[in-house]
Length: 214
Length: 214
DNA sequence: TTTCTCGGATACCGGCACTATCCAAACACG
DNA sequence: CGTGTTTGGATAGTGCCGGTATCCGAGAAA
Image (cartoon, rainbow over all chains, first blue to last red; front, side, top):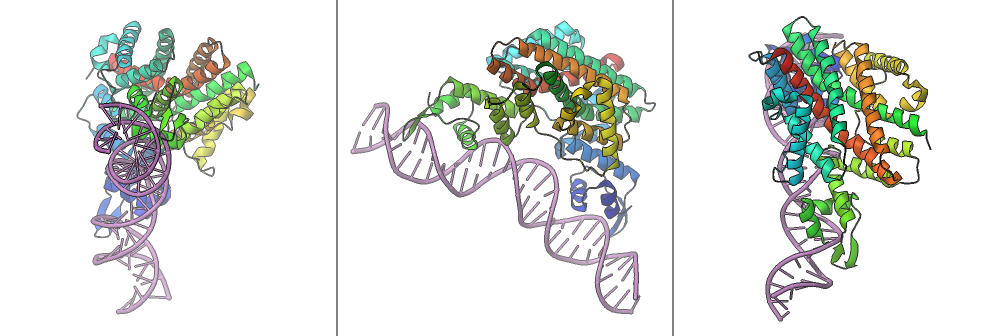
């Protein structure tokens, strides 16, 4: 398959494919001679994955490169690799550790993890970027005076835990290690938009159900 | 409060506050004379909200302006206003209606809504941007060959429905209409990052629980 | 009076995701 | 065979977005 055919079959412009090649998101094709390179189905699949990560998952190009690097790196165990891939996802900016709301949010989140019994692996969890994102989000809510009850957050966490169990159960159904890894990462990246869209739809539905269109 | 004090108390630089004023994210202060304007606590609160929307909620500046416009517009009913605010949130790009995967995803999502019994308001739901986002995300998954089972998506949806019920129950606890509206929008914008962070943490937790760090 | 600070207008900046142009090699076709 | 088109690679440019920096003249402070 030539570059132009790759472009046609993927719906991605040649210029953009060249850009992805430059950025290392796509491996170069097999060079036939000075002016011809050949691409295969795997390139097409990779390209579609990259596009989906960017357009559906809203990942920056640099992040896609990083995530793919971890996915391809088979020198690590699964938890670490999945963790590495997840940790590369874009996160909220570093909070100001001095800020009183941030400190309070830290305590609140730690309390939450304690309640949930996620503290077995707390050493792991607390260095995760997701932990930081959670702290930042909670701090922002509190600073704005929204007194979202901690019990409510616990309930959210239980729901997301159920979702994670569903994710990983599904991942389990794949036989090969490589497929498991890819499905896990795809799950992390593409399930989030699905959950988000479902959450918004559910809010609209529930709001319409309760209040009509008054 | 002068601009400099507003800057100090919010932690946002003067130049940035001026930018937000230009962009209409902040109402101008009360003009005392040609070179002095005064800001009050409400400005400070608004500024914090704007910052949180941008940094925690990752909303583009133009979107913040639009969402705030809907929040401030008290000429509409609650469902519509909340809907309007949610609809202004950044969405996935318009899918290619010709694409077979998009068409299949449409059918799959309609089937999902049917199963969930959300089809009472289907006329509303199907014009929602969230519906479109869902279609795009499902189409992307399918195109990549991830055969995420529809039942799994139904389960996700049920979970998010529970989350939405929790959201709106909490919104109910506020007495005034204005507070309800603001809490609902803040909920939509700030609960999402919380859910996302919890989802990732739960995945890490569950993965560690199942596989250790092999 | 002198100096500092204020708010407003305008121009500028850096990053990002592309996009357009150019080039020489090579294939396609009459 | 020659001529026009297509190829992949290199490089430069574009448009948008979130901010920054600079300049200005009016007023407050010492």
